[in-house]
Image 1 (tube, rainbow, N blue to C red):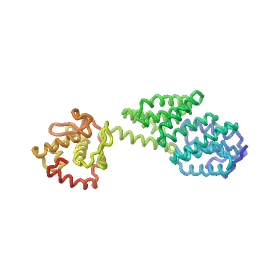
Image 2 (cartoon, rainbow, N blue to C red; image 1 turned 90 degrees about the vertical axis):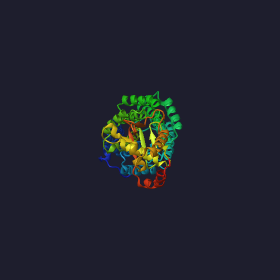
Image 3 (cartoon, one colour; image 1 turned 60 degrees about the vertical axis):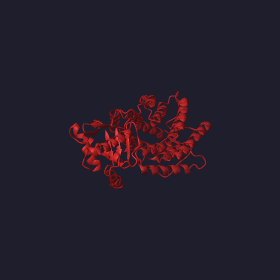
Length: 424
């Protein structure tokens, strides 16, 4: 058996080397995998450490590399930079022990490290090396990782490779790899890996905002993970359901899924997953707004249009700001509207005179409607109200950067021109 005995670096409950035998590391790895699937991540992590030390004690290089790879993944999940650094040192020691023939799992570990750093091109290179090493293992008849077969290792590697393509923006290439992997492995008894293929295919559709196209894949992943009682991967299925609900504009359901996941994924061991939930929270908050007014960028977003630029049309911005502020008032429905006199005072800073101001106000309201309304004849956002205007009742409005002093100073010249009677 190949021998590997670098100096201990990872924390663990130490056990004398004489207490280990050739099967101890494999048993511990299987136990750690099971704990991970049941979301007992802290216990799983400690068991992977014990498996690492058990494998080192008996010189089982493949189990050592497998334990390191699993520890790296869990440390990345926990955002534990200190343990990631320790794992990296152990990995370098392992590679130094085999300068001519690096064990296949070492390439896997290198890919995990590159992915943790979001170095996707490097991760892609390491995964290709891993696939070559697995093929050579098959030719040479070498034993595989302690807890999975060669076919399972190959399938996981292809799924990881597809993910690197997706992360680099090569969605079509990722889809081709996943469809090939599906044809190659779906008929085999590999529910966890096939579930990952389904999940990845679903995510590619979700990135295109194709919730209908994603549904079938996500549901197949759901069934695959439930068949193994893999609650950890099931969390990612629920996360995908939250994204699908948001894309379908079912914001209450999306929020319900996120609240459920926040309760399930507690503690530092879920740090990466919770970061993902926070990102989705922000997307949900942004998408659930009907009308967003960004005074800093002079942009407006509606349900139908994004990135509507106001250019330097500050009057239109001020009208929207004034109406948005009124829309957020507390009180009766009529308190959320502005009369013509109030608009003239707030936007132009003048006392309302119908003969002077009515045409000016009508002209600019029409300009604004041309920008934001899907149909000018049936306004959905900016409505007439008695002797004035208001935003539609029930509209979810987000107002940003309304009091930016730099922007205010840049508007003075235009406002002076407007006070002299200019429509602009």
